[in-house]
Length: 386
Image 1 (cartoon, rainbow, N blue to C red):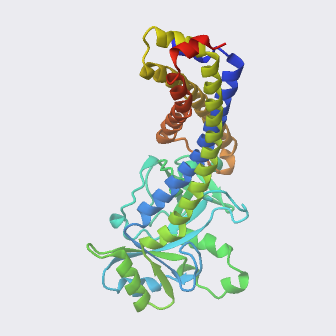
Image 2 (cartoon, rainbow, N blue to C red):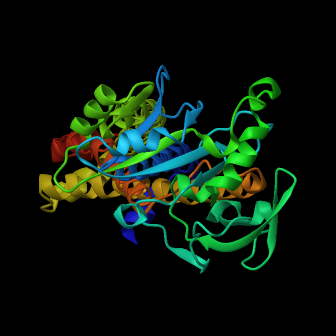
């Protein structure tokens, strides 16, 4: 309580100082929660691609590009030594007219479900069950699309003007599957062909269309080596291993994270400068008090600890208030964007704790010079100070 009384001796000044710390922590929470959301998406992708090979059409500059492949390529790929199973996939936007989206756009995913027993990235279900190859006309809905599609198990959802029965709702993963709808390969092929130009559509067998293949290696087979073997053995395809995801996505997001955290930390450091100013003025105003304390036996260490405690208290109050305001702000923004399936922010425990700890440490560091200055005062000179 004595620390709080000392801190709030000059209420307006200390409130302005705390406000500076609060704004800095608010910026750290907002920017950091955006980075945390992106990091979770990347972590999910890293886990998914860590033990498999993705095959797309040759000439594609990105492993996420979608171009037509023939399902017949599956047999050629499976014949490559080291391949345990090959699954044909269709991936396309749930709403092709939805425009650009920050974050993961809602996706429609279809597959023949081969190799499910080899899949390491397991999806659990909040309601219902997983799809089977016989579930034509049925879908499983990701957690973030439930409200948007008004999905419930046993009911139906409208996708591209067609009704599909909902057999399952996936648990929240905080990664890409949350914004996906899964269906059988024939259903996905039918929808995908709607986006193909009519001239091309009339020349293609719908049942033979795929946009990619997921290749599951045999036990002990290195995915990177297998990707190179597939590229050498099968024409017209581009096989990529786990490192491709790191190069295309993970490394890029690291730079983005540095920018986000850099902006936030600069804001917080500016708040720290106001702590230095406040504590320096406080030491000047309390010079006689310091002289009295030293005259009756207070050590230099006790004086330093007193002012550091006050500085850290300013940091703690500013950190907690900044965290609270930041958490409320990102929650409201996420809620407002919920209907558009844009979920930009995620306040994780490590971000919340780290923000407050950083504010306290900043307060301690900012209060170090004023505290040492106070401790070095000579008692006689301090008592004579006017």
